[in-house]
Amino acid sequence: MSTLSPAPGSTTGPKSSGGAVEPAATLGLLRQPKTVLFGPGQRHQLPFLVAGIARHLLVTTDARMAQSSDFLEIIEGIRAKGTEVSIYAEAEPDLPRENIVDVAMQFRGSEVDAILGIGGGSCMDLAKVVAVVLANEGDVRDYYGEFLVPGPGLPVITVPTTGGTGAEVTCVSVVFDREKGMKVGVASPFLEPFAAVIDPELTLSCPPGLTAATGADALSHLIETFTGRVKRPTPEDIDTKLYVGKNRLADMFARNGLHLLNTSLEAVAADPSNLEARSDTMLAAYNAGMAINTAGTAGAHAIQGAIGNLTHTPHGFGISALLPYVMRFNLPERVPEFAEIGRIFGVADPADAELDQARTGIVRVEELLAALGAPLDLKTLGLDPGDFDFVADQAMLATRLTANNPRELTRERIVAILERAYADDRSWWVVG
Image (cartoon, rainbow, N blue to C red):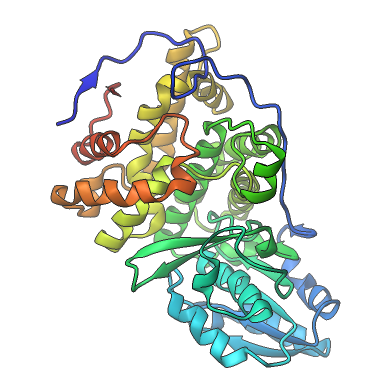
């Protein structure tokens, strides 16, 4: 077991990983689609949006969505406006590279001039990355990493049918490369969708397990961006890096998203047909997507990738099982932020000590995850303790994410977090 030190009684505020007081974020940066339509029934605007940009539309989705009445109605409406439509309905969870290669082989050299991604995160990520592969040629592997896409892609319209990934507004696609045995990101402003149409009615048929996993993911995005590292990027950094750190505009979206999820997640879990709760959850997921698009996710997402590959569990459930422990690890450097989260949730008494307020915020996050039925420890996922070292090694390779964490992540610290997460130890420990 890794060495642990007692939890601090108080803290003076945000600090860098070296212990110096960290100045507050002053930068604000947004990357966003040209058009965002939100609200029940807004899918009916799709034929008009598509007609303005496409003569031949490629639609990427999965087999379940392709058989739904909502999907068939959308396609019929688009065709009625005179747009030719081709459909690829074989998108798989965790977006395997093979899906991208398959679509590129089928449609390279065709007259497709726009793409619509409708479904969960993988369906939308497929649309975004295929758009740049078709426009720029080459293999998707050429674009793994940040700012490696050489030019604009075909215009993309995203339509989420789950409330949580934020992929409808982000300029990242996450790809599972089976030969490499890991998930990798294609991160470039050229992946930014042209338009996003967010219709909460499309989530009413979302299965409970998927609702729970994506809801947990949205909550984690908000927590990790709001408590992330302040980076002070140079002009060159902003021009070459997707994630520029915690910033004022990302914080604005994070606060609003947290406020919404505080009530909507429990309401959706209690009654999946509650359209108002579905709407608030989807609006929060959009807010989370806007936040991570410049601030980025952090420790929990860096660690989860290898766990998902080993246990074959949904991304959101891996994140949920890690989040209580990553929050505790980061707490010493982010007491003011966690205290504010407690106040946003309405569970912290402003008269209490700031550390006590911060702890109530963390506990409330766990209550929301539990209400969804999401796991809160790694043993539930079936992770073998013998794999902790491998998971830590893989997490350390995710430098684009570890760089966003407010406390420095080392291999030893990640192993200590995994040990606590496996033991379901939610006492107020601090990894040294």
